[in-house]
Length: 143
Figure 1: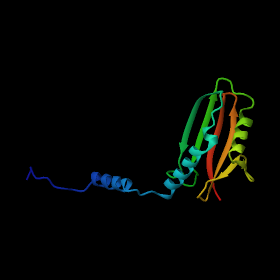
Figure 2: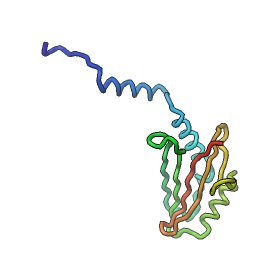
Figure 3: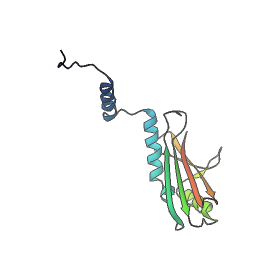
Figure 4: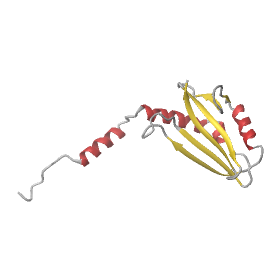
């Protein structure tokens, strides 16, 4: 009959089931790794270091998973200035060393273990005279 409603499972049922999975606390290994790395970076004194010359901060997260599952999570942290001082990189390195980072043995940058994890934070620090910025790229390595 024209007025009868017939239930046919379709896209809406699939979307509802997917939403239930997300709301129930189902997390993948990639999600846990992303959370561990990003939380550790956000708690680190180097991430919170704001020298007086910094006029703007820009952060960008690139989680692991998706189209590049083999990549590690990465947080790019840029400090911009009107005029970047010559000592910007050495000042950032001094801050890193004072907060427990040490030189990486087999790669450029500095490393610091993440407590309670098999991961090690890794950071590279560089400057851009053209952009008047100091860039820090935080990532993770498996121990």
